[in-house]
Image (cartoon, rainbow, N blue to C red; front, side):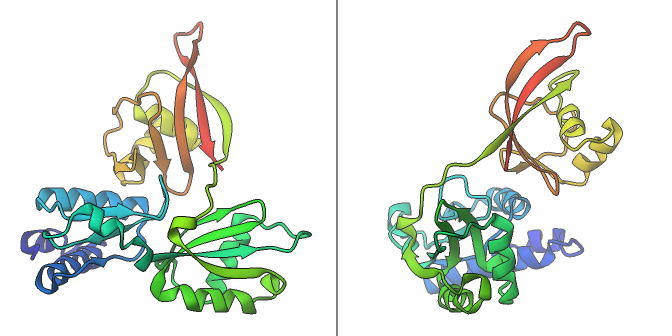
Length: 264
């Protein structure tokens, strides 16, 4: 399966990823069982969506445990299954590790993340970390959730915390936090936005785009002339994730002052 696609990516850094996806699909087809990937970042999801579309594969779902998740898995299911049947199996694939901190403690996202990394768990085995008023919800693959829970309980920073495993349906509803910023662009071209958001020259912004480091609404975009629309989500790897909120006004020089919401 995926012979032409494998050949196309044989010298690419994505060679292993493409091979794994091909194997997952083959297993799903031959065993008639649901199977799924590890957690993937926006770059990997964008590539695999493109490949699956080209290969005319339709029996797959992107799922990260919550709406607009930053990290997701891809679930493959036999053609005899419906999406509704697959959705009923979500709790057998993902779980939530809930950390309730003592009242006198408050940690940021990086402190939860560094704690998990100390356990030696690979980043692809857990998804988004949702920081709440009382602690955090960590989305995890079921096959590592027990180890993750027990490991966190042994860490000094979480010694007095209550750590439980919860059904993925019971994940905390956490609103994204944003920082409002304003930038000035000469037009709605992507390279103008990248230049301002990444704080670099237009020529370097074009290089960033050509290198595949920019995504519009989770789709890899390689054209620096791409027109940005209101509510588009712009992701620049290593720089952040932004929403174009609209034009505030046109300046005397004919440029545009625009509103941006940056994900915190």
